[in-house]
Length: 276
Image 1 (cartoon, rainbow, N blue to C red):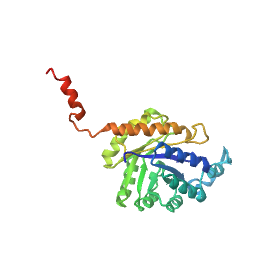
Image 2: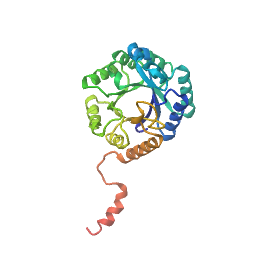
Image 3: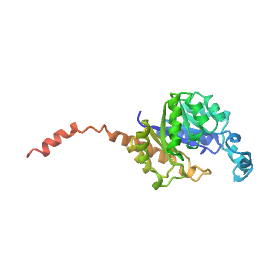
Image 4: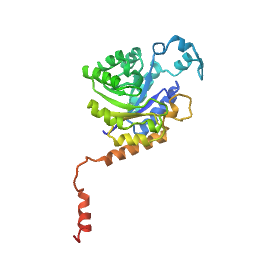
C-alpha cells in the first residue's frame, strides 16, 4: 500500500458539517487513505475558570463559546461516518479525554490516534492500547522518557502502533524540523515511524518520505486564511493533491537498494563500452 496518508481535518471545519464534508471530499479526491478529527469533552479538558474567560470568536465572547462552537457531537459524527462510508475513505479521531475516547469507540473505526499533548496521559494510553487497534502516536512536545513510557504501555498490552515524528508549533519553522529524529526513533524503538507535519509548504514532507516514513499526516483546509488556530499550518486542496502525487513518485523511485546493473542498462553499456 505504501505510505499511509492521513488528512488531518481536526477542528478546521469550524463547527460546520458542510465544511467538514467538503474537506473529506477533497482528501478523497487527492487520494488520501483517511481523514482524522479531534474530539474533546470541553468540561474535562479545560478548567471552568478558563472556559469562563474572555475570548472573541464567531460563536461569542468566552472561551466556552469558542470551544463548544468547534466541537461536533453525535449527530454530526453519525453523518461523517455515513458520508465517509459512502465515498470510500476511512476516518478516525484523536480523543483528548476518556469520555471522548469512549465516544469514538462507539463507531466501528480501524485506527486510534494519540495526539502529541496526550502522550503523557497514562489513563488514556492504557484505555486505547487495550483496544488492540493500530494506533498512531505523535511525539511532539515530548522527551525520550515520555515516548518510552507510551511505547512500553502499548507493548505491554500487545497493541500495534507506530510513532509519528512531530514538532508541535503552528506553523513549524524549517530549522525546527529535525527530520533525522525519524531515523533515531526507528533505531531506538525498532518500530515503524511516520511524520505529522505542521509546516507550510511541501519540501519537508518530501524529505520525511526519503527517510522511510510509513505514514504521513498533514492538516487540510479549504483556505489558510479561514478562522482557526490550525489553518496557517494546513495545506489547501491543491497542495494536498501535489503532496500525494510527489510522495507516490518518490516511493517508486526509492527502489530496493540492491547494488547491480539495471537490466535496461545492459544494451546501453554494450554500446558505450564497445571500444573497450
